[in-house]
Image (tube, rainbow, N blue to C red; front, side, top):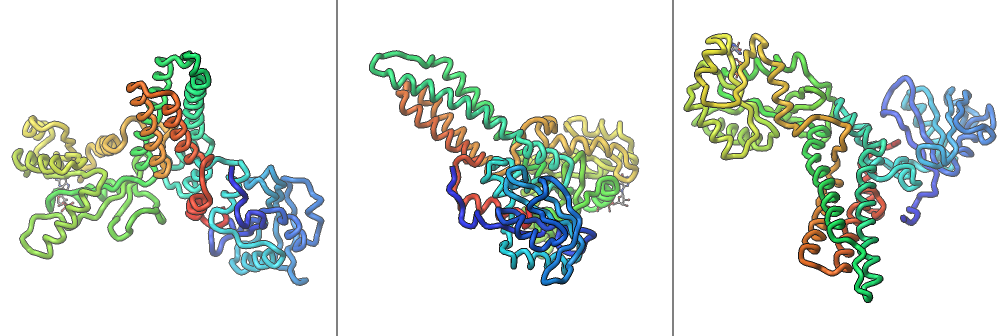
Length: 460
Ligand code: GDP
């Protein structure tokens, strides 16, 4: 498959735990010299003579000076994460100690690991396929129940399994076609065309499902930009506070967001709703304010969902209809929420808006129908059930490759419709297999791999 990468024979070292002060830090060494390098620093016993998967307590000593008391875990290849001989040194969490141990390992012949290099080695040694390796990064970055579950499922090979089925189907197809080619002189048709057609159709259906799941995958992985908009005094701040009180997400640093435009993040049923700051929305002739409004309008267009909150007692039916028309013309995914039902009463308000479907009536102040609002909000961004047992594509690279697979499958279908000869059909099938192989890493190149793994953290 792949030639050996440059530097692949080196023994690498890195701190695997989060940078900075902690109770414990773990330093990882992987490669053919891992045992001998660590052994040099660990005088209490000969680590090279100890069985794999054992723990050893002792001192790390450099230049006759004790650096720390540590526990060393031994993993002999291939039964390790990377597939190589691997050692993990659990030391006290001082950054000074960590650095001293790293320096001593480097002095002993190890080299500092690049981001993701441990996982890259696991991939190159066949411990994981590429989709599984990528899910390791997703797992580390997961920040909600849903993103954790999908990454976990993928790491365990869920997505690879689907791709494997697809691959088998396509290989069967091309084998039949090629068999036919071998006997072309004798004018036999081995490959029953209807059967082949069904096979390609089934494959296309599966790819379609995977492609469709990406929208959901994106929501799970990255959350949904959400805008709560409405006139001043509609109750936006009140609603926001009500929602935040129950659902504020713990967010340290979520990739892919510009911090200054994101105010708060809600975690509803495991999905992150990132609330875009749309403070500027109001009608005004003032130029500065208009710029604010314009910016807000741009942000609204970027939002995955817009909650339009209005005072149901104040707004006229015509006014609301105009607002709906405007959302529709801009293809905005909106949700109509009529607030302050406590003033006039829900049934009177339902009567007033009887001709406008799908309004959710709430009282932000009295916390009325908030659970319903949350449910509808989730429904607005998820097509179907959030069943993470199903394979959900979360990775943009996989999404792009799957679209190529589908394109080639459609070419095959069209080719069959037009009575294209078998050798040309086989070409398109091979193209499909190529794009599939790109996802799992059977077809790849070093630059691509370096790029994928460079997005990992150091030590993983
Ligand atoms: P914003 O300008 O859209 O952010 O609106 P606010 O959240 O500041 O609310 C404006 C006023 O409406 C405040 O006095 C709120 O207490 C009040 N308000 C908000 N929600 C409700 C509600 O459900 N019922 C009633 N009666 N008043 C509400």
